[in-house]
Length: 129
Image (cartoon, helix red, strand yellow):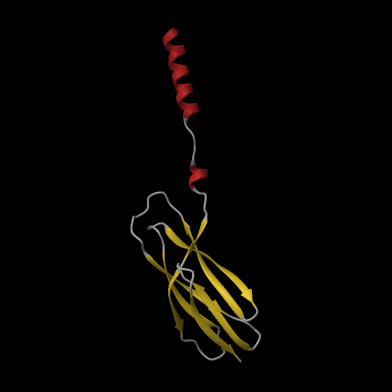
């Protein structure tokens, strides 16, 4: 009887000591990634302007998350935000790319400033007629 009680106690201890940490591994934060290069993509007349942005992430789990845009009149300051998903990541510093579409309905000259890691900008001018 003592062995049975002891065995049940050990099984109960083992089962209650297991913890599901899945919630902790799925937490996502976004981080700033400076733009490494900007290339305008040719588009048809009356189409939105598009730019290919290259940026580095800190490891193989790094991916594009979103754009953070600040609008000041006809000037847009664009930051690339990244996210890191996964538990086993390669330890390289991969170059990623994303397309930034620029579209407005009001004619004018627009300045797009893509933030680099060092705090300076790649500056592009778009004329909308």
